Image (cartoon, rainbow, N blue to C red; front, top):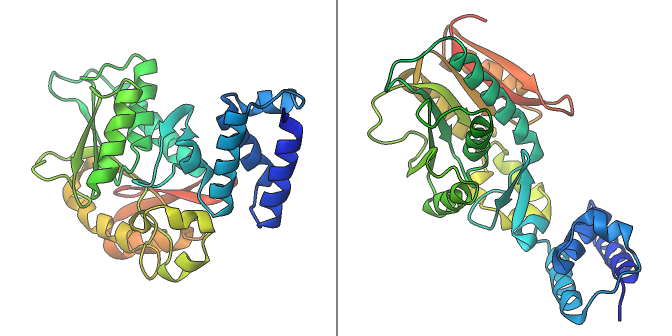
Length: 300
């Protein structure tokens, strides 16, 4: 019977030859998924046998990866902010960089809740624009649940233009037990029929320049182009949201928008051009790169 070590070695060699950026990681994840164990177990037991069924599953997964399909889609899951999300071609795969946006939003929610007791019906309103798999809104909701923040204290609404993505987001919300804490609705940026302003707006909208789409890794071609293509300068969709912020963001409200690592100066300039008198600062991710534009009314 085949064992882990030779299967892993063969897969790594084939993935490396195909130009895959992380051949060992990908091979370990796929083999662990086929066998039903974590990567650590794969590495700890190189001589463990792999049954014919698991080997067949692994080889089929390997062929899919060699064809360019993302590991997350092959496994059907992606870890994000300490949670495991179901992922498939209906929505963009959550990226580790986006965790910075989630952390900033949670900090702001808790800061506002700590400012004083709110009257009944005056919950803190948080809007997630372009929710995709629901990773941002669900991560916020799950964190607030751990902090014993009641569902009546914070109202989370997540919107997306894609009905398929919203179906996936709802599945993830139910899977993480926060289906009663996050509402989902189809919308192009702004939810219809919502006449009250939002204290916090979060968004991970498309920000890849149109002319850079063709040079992205092959794996991204399996993801929805709608979730990646940010137009000529990469900021067209974000710019549309900026134009809407004066009517959607409450006085004293704040927006957290994810941006590309090369868009720090551009987003500050865009906010200055479109939102006179508003403030914009850029927060860095763990790699020290520009990642989140923090936007609000007034100076500083």
